[in-house]
Image (cartoon, rainbow, N blue to C red; front, side, top):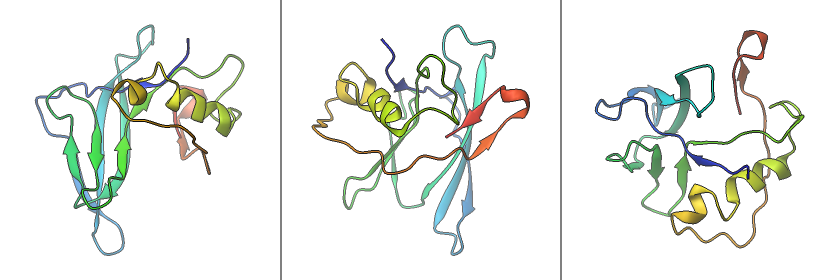
Length: 137
């Protein structure tokens, strides 16, 4: 079954690279590497994302990538999942992305997060690597 699972940092013993971002410097831009999915031709996959600089890092000990806004509970997760057969990041539907992320067998549901309904409001390819070797969404 295809579901989304935690993406684990390749080297959890070292802190990820964080730089200031945003117009007012109120964001962090994180550069890190995660372990590639089993069966992948690559051992590591580079990730880059931004989040508010006052968010708290969770799951540091196990090597997962999670941050939380302590004021309202918003969370940032880095997950990995196989795409449905015959799709690419450009063609996969928002519904399929939501199904992968919120499946009851996936990491978010198994962590105790209750999700009764969800809607993926938007999805866009942010960048692609040459010759479709990798991409981010």
